Image (cartoon, rainbow, N blue to C red; front, side, top):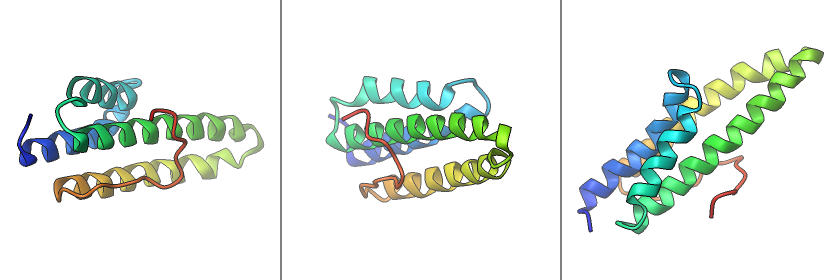
Length: 114
């Protein structure tokens, strides 16, 4: 079992792993998934944050695909930058909550992993 500080740090990394998608293809899903799978049994705090981060990044991938398709009717060009800003802002908010030891639920997500 990890200490509270270690659990909080790992939860923060689960959320910040979502930013890896801007550097590594599918990194925004792979990194939170790997961290969650490795550490989920060590702490309920890590388990909840890992699932939340994974659900958020999968949901936003779906939204990005839909927005990309909507580029054919031009509205996607407006939606994609909004999605990027929302993605980054929500990850920062969730990371700060995890670092304070608080649970955080992302808005606008599809709960696929439970």
